[in-house]
Image 1 (cartoon, rainbow, N blue to C red):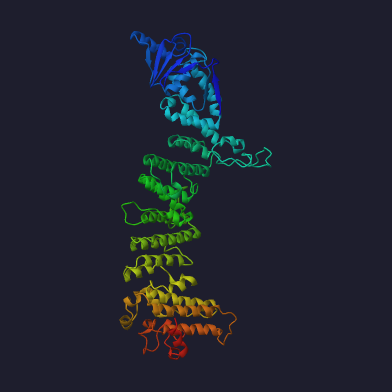
Image 2: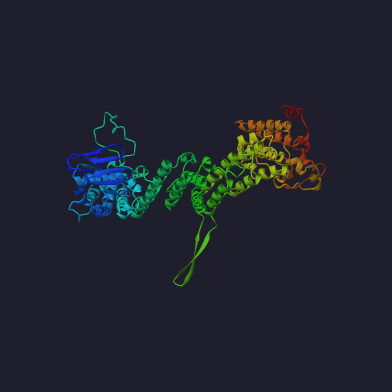
Length: 624
């Protein structure tokens, strides 16, 4: 830390009690100056020779016939006045970063200019500031912090603006010219603590570009904003570093911010910090992480920031939503809401994400009096879309645990990403299953509505195994899952993929064809859940199919299909004729040939030979 000593005489100021200061001298004091709650008994001559204000005040007191002068409004209070008084006496006084601004403001108040005496205090302090303080990174920050207690005078003296300019300029210098002593807030490296016996005293680690960000966190938000604006205006520091500086400030100044919350305290102050950080965010996408933006959004909601600030955060988050995690999106709902999480805000974020990928726009340009059209395609990559779809699946699974979450909120959010093609629907299935588990009282029509979001063909083998045992799913979904698992098993083993029976197709559309079918296969039957006995039978069949599909080296018969494949397909045909799936084909008996998918090659064809029950088939359906 830089310092400057003034004067050479010994300090002879003494205290009499708590509120009296005087100069020990052979000469009697002839003036009393009241500064706040402290009374100074001093001599007129050394003071009046250097202070124009005291000269005027003493003249006034003579007219009023009193020896007391009240200067309680002097900036810096008793401490700053004592520095000025000692300087007038020629006593030794030390100026440093902590007291120099107060002394400068007090000297200005006392009018200690060069016109009073050459080499007066104002001149000496100004030289000290420009030649020492403003050249030191650490001292400049300390001085800037002290100015908040001395406004507006230090603003008028341009101490604040000069200090801010110096700090901003130093933050923008080439890192090769930065000495590590600048970053006094950082943790010391092992070699600097003397813990590295092999250190030769030469620092060979490069200085990071964001070396200054932690140091500026000591500043109050108003001064911090002005410094950051100056740094941005200089235009040398990258937006990534600016983003890192804002992140560091938020973590330092907002208690609980790292956990997505704000601890109780001065909410007006916290709101000012949040709003300022949002205002300072660089325009470039990606200069701060999506996780940080979501934490800012949570904080802005908690401190009740303005709608424009929240909208700006939602817009920015939507632009890089693929970077977010499920935990990032779990925004607590306002206290007046019955739900646990703020799903509406997440919907707005997803909408902002999807808006980036609008259909191609046509822009009209006029060049050389000719109308030209340029086409701009969507900017979202398929990978980004897929990541967001998976993110929303995971988010839905988490919020489904809220017993107060309405079905419409769940479905509306899920439908926002339904057009994004996903190779697997396991995440969506998990979310749907979680909702059904936590909301057992929903109606059959509501179950049908939520299950329509899922494509059974896109469930993994493990998800299929879970689904066919799931007593919460409607029977139509269980049947579809089992059938498509059999289709996949046949395809992976090299067998021809069977046509989808008309009954299975009808399950997807909700239509059941003929009136006869409608009388047997009512919506209530298929929207109802399967019984435990039904699920046991389905589970056994799926396990048998998976086992058959996993057998390697099976012999092939004349038509190119393995014997195991034939057995697996026959098992499925037997299952489709069982009591669980009889509903699908109950209207076909005695009608002769059916169309397309009901041909003799289809799994669902009512072939008399295949329809005969065998002991082994009966035994298979009797086991659990």
